[in-house]
Length: 274
Image (tube, rainbow, N blue to C red):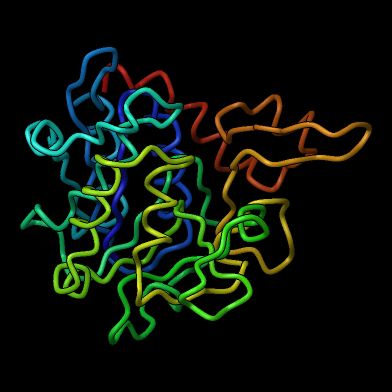
């Protein structure tokens, strides 16, 4: 199973937790591709954290692999100029350079760093991708506000935190190249996600269980700890990340992942000195 992550040093805790969850729930070999870069005001994903993650993969299965890929020069050549001053994190754009990286395989699953894999996802990963650019789950809130009239579907706005990518098809349609160009020219809310939804013509919508963005349900296979809205006791946004264990317990009342978070707590100190 090929997995792609993107991020700077702030992504290290989340990717470690996601790694532990994948190791727990995956029986086939795992191949990680972590995309990072050096940029002013940011610190790249560090080698110590990468070595720890690679060590955990190899301990589980010698066939597991990991590669840390520096995308600095690619980013400099095609920066998202129109979106550099927004709340957008430029590291999220790095996945859009996957078509320029020869080591990225044709089938790869992109995951945000605030993801926990709860159950086996082999059926999702191995689904037929004939004539499909990407597969994702509807954005829990965005589906009500954003719509592409060309798809002829009432709901079609995908959350980009979990995306199964068909790189051969993406290269053929030049989807990522078109998205990079749009992000350079037009300022957008959630720019990479919005551009992907606008420009992807061959996308497939997967069941909610593969990217649960609101609250844990019995069939959840992937839980995404994204910012959400709550209406009680008053309307407010809510953001709780997996590595904020105290708030996972106190705010979300969630103990489903205590075994994984215990492992993470024991390993966390090694992120900077592995």
